[in-house]
Amino acid sequence: MATQVRTGRYDVPSSPVDFEPWLAGMELPVLAVAIEGDAMAPPGGVRGLCDKLTSARVTYAELVLPEGAPGGPHYGWIRDNAALVERVRAFVDRA
Image 1 (cartoon, helix red, strand yellow):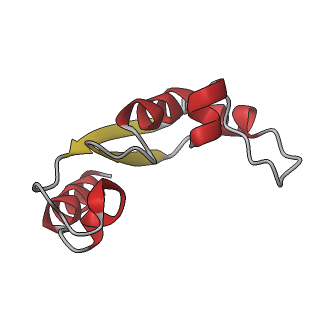
Image 2 (cartoon, rainbow, N blue to C red):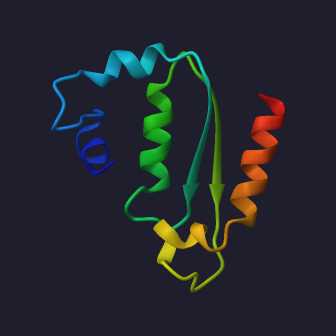
Image 3 (tube, rainbow, N blue to C red):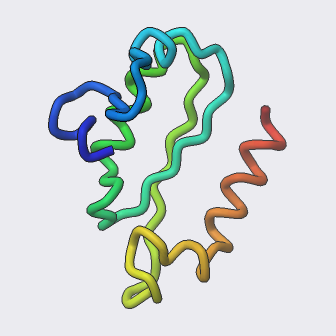
């Protein structure tokens, strides 16, 4: 995610694959969830990745964890996952 945020390109340094055309050609339903305040996968970066999925049906959601969630924004959803589970359940029911 950090490389994408800095460069605008989805790149995996250990892979010779150019993922940009692959991402654009994906024709899947995608649920993308960003966590407010997550510096490791910021909402803007998640939206930027979603923008690359030009052929996919993307549902974007942004969650807010309770103040002081254990693990901080990036990992806090693991222990406080009710909102995320509900989003995933609703997405799967619609897909």
